[in-house]
Length: 466
Image (cartoon, rainbow, N blue to C red):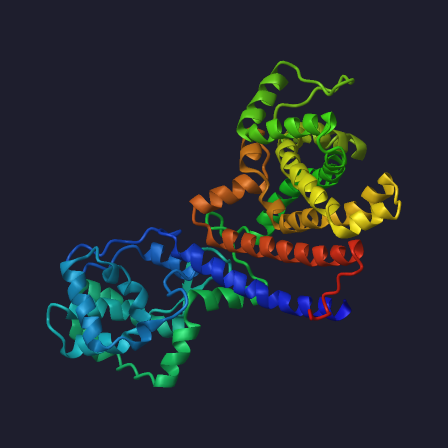
């Protein structure tokens, strides 16, 4: 077992990297991105002059690079010339919109077009050449504004200003030296390194997961972990309580199969399964407005929120804060529990009934094992394995919380936050959340394997099947 666990732990980073790759590609292939692409309309020589702040934003998040393979370094002069011609005739074409992004990788073809290309293309090629030659680096304040590499860009700034005034391509040619041609080895190296995924992966290795799109001063790790505290508090109790209750009710229903107890519980859980959360939650809110109390107590359940107002919450004792949060989460937890309990209980019943028909169970009955010992020591451990698998696989879902419940009860959890991140195309939040969710899921399956061995000592992952 020790060797198996060591092998699983060693494969964990590799599995996470592969999952990150898939999520990264899927997220970046979805139409739209955090920045609004600028149109290249406006005629020759003026098509690429606007949207500098937009370009800086896209540079910051690596949106100007290809996702996995940078083929731009292999573009020939003829191909670049065709793209420039397309930019003049069809400003909305897909190739036209990527010219600004490709500029740093096609400097030599642009220089050749400036030098000996058609007069209609030379001003546009010159503007792209200046744009691609400018080096923009993130500022030390970690804002979306960029600092220029002064040693390199001082001359480029002068060229840009002069070019905008007199539109003289020859002045730029006289002031700039011809870019060196890249060797095949350099092109292959750049084609793999200068991509969005490699840049993001290098940041992840440094444990830098970036900042929020709308708040460049807020690290993604801080805001996600803050939201997760609410969602995990809201989801942890239903997660573990339903698992235990499902085992109890499933065992009762299976051991009394066909009797009134089984029929009653089965009907009740079927009804609970059929009632959607978005119906139950507003119903509870309506009752709370009318003064819903906890049964046999005078404690009134609040309408919404994770806790009371800060002025009240900060003045409470530790036990008072616990009770305050418990009152606020009573209705949300009830909404999250009933449907999950119905599903897991019916699954547990089916698993126990299947195990009860096994040969070793009939052999135990033939040996005279009592009914109580039969169900608790023979059927329960083996029938619980499918439920353990379900619970372990759902561990990563815990961080998602519930968008419906968190929205209706106004709980600042991760569910609503993640939904808003999808709409805002906040890539850093989405990718870090997928990493955390994948990690929890892999850990859950690892825990499930350990539980399997504890439940059934006959299970040996290191022994090869014969």
